[in-house]
Length: 290
Ligand code: SF4
Image 1: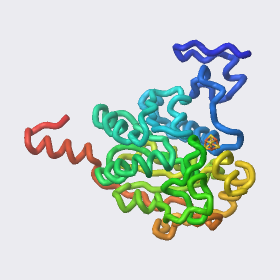
Image 2: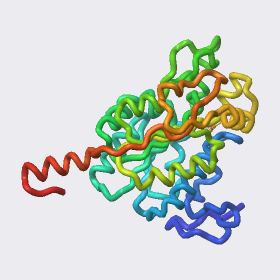
Image 3: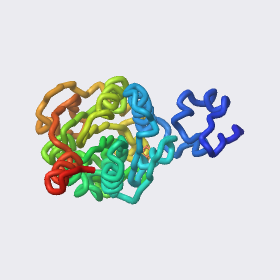
Image 4: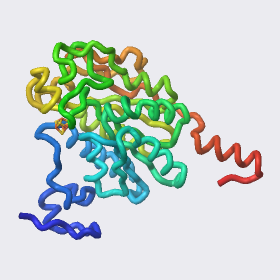
């Protein structure tokens, strides 16, 4: 068995032979818990490559995750990272962004964590235009706990809590993010590797509330329950059924069970961030800023 790397983060030659991204991974946490052909691996690879491409000093990047399969990412990335409580990744990220505005704060979590238990934090963080990048990996279910219906489960998709098909309307996350105040809104699938990587590279240096949704397969819970094949089948299905429409109104981007998926960059604007407005306000009152 391979020896774990030194806990001080030293990368051993063996690690690089095992994984070309060993530098960015906590190899002592491997093997990971993700199922075979889950979309989380490719999503994390795109994040690492996008971060590299952005040229940002990785010591300035902090990753915050909530609970769930996606939430494991914070523990696997060899960056300053926080694996927080369920639904509370955004408040943790808000604290980090306010305490150290030089940090590039990235929240990576799932649809259940971000849009259900953390839904209120999502709309208010976007409303404030907090300086953070959100990578929401949307697999339409609660994978880790066995495949319950969640806030993005399409109508008629089956789940353990909806054996005859879900009958609640799902959130359209890009529309929700934009309507709440996000300044950068993008959607790709977990197989749009280059495009997702490019969007991450573009979004990391930007200011304000940036939201990237990644439509990703959960073979174990969602695909199995809905007889949609393996994770690779489903990843390919999402990719091949997507229509790239940059600048589309996210209101058109609802997702129906096994329907077409509109992807692309929907929004990229600038408006003063929470930190900028707060600094201006303090400067006006006291004649100085932070
Ligand atoms: Fe991925 Fe689903 Fe397995 Fe979780 S349960 S690791 S989301 S395939």
